[in-house]
Length: 330
Image (cartoon, rainbow, N blue to C red; front, side, top):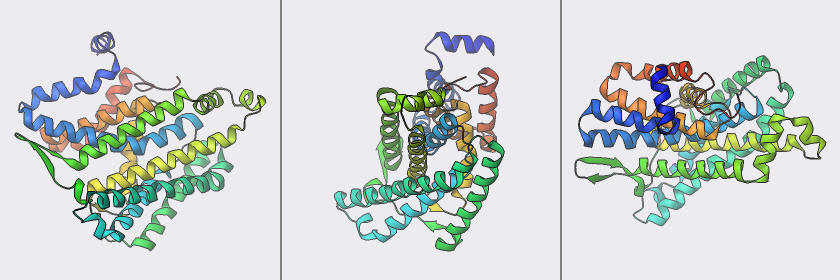
């Protein structure tokens, strides 16, 4: 295993892991058209998982907050987006692409805006009293998650809710023997745009510099006159908004959602941030792509192993790199 790890580091580093995984899958699958369909599906799934996981990675890695209530934002984002799309049903099903885009934008915007506002409330009321106390963080955020799920049941009921897709995102693109869903391509593009935006903010702006400096030495940053608590509130709000956006996209992907959608995704989200490394946006993206590709390939090659594939992937990565693939700090 050490020899394989050394070769990976030598020939391009860990960023080529998804490529290596895809090459191995191509050999095992043997049919290029099937492999390409699975690969596109895996990349799209990875990008949607990245949207949900990136927020928790920021909050967990940069603020040292164990927020098990993160999945509540995923659930609310999914249900709010579904409600907006249902209310704009005539726009969603119209042949006019501008109306389709307007309905989609309204649904994603409503979910994201809710995430921002709810994130501010969550941080001020629930998280602020338990900073630096991980045990109480776990207990109080788990309690908040239970309350949030009950609120969803009270508002939307316990029956599964159908989520319509805008007309222009329905169907597939056929390239020879390859069938690629348009929605998957859109999900991949949106995830890529969000990643580039986050990377630019954290690494190319003064705000990103202050956030990273505040994590390393909060007292020094405050002594220089900066309100680091306000920056951390902003980070938490951003993380919550990204979770809600990811929930909205996942709802359109699943097309049928229940109140447990957030809890079901939370396990995968934690696996992704552990694989990628805490506080690292690049690591979260890498982990999400690995999980998305692995899940699709294994589901095709060995369906009975699909549920365990992500856990096995995490174990293998941690045996090789105990801090994750690209942790922000060690």
